[in-house]
View (tube, rainbow, N blue to C red):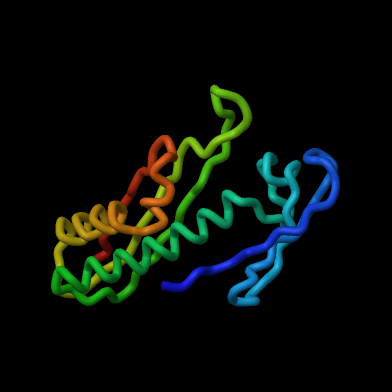
Length: 147
């Protein structure tokens, strides 16, 4: 199985420093990162580990969900997945990711709303990124079937 690599170059202190994260395996992009922007409500064009986790979770979930729908005999027609990853204080000190909220909207032929939701629940449980994030306090799932 493949291994994917990202690399971050960082200069300076936590509060004053900044860096760049590079998607090394694909060469698709390089993004600026900084702790003050990470901890702020407005990212001002700078990404964060939480945003990158959200991207990973949304794309992994979409793939897993498509597979679950196919396994249930349905044909995915239009699926949109978003993931909201929160950063918060850790009672033990430092920070942690207390919640991830996955939102799924879409439709598939050959399945009803209940089957669509059941496939989404299976995707949430089976998605490799969901499994990797098992230490997150709560991962919620909101599903809207537009069938």
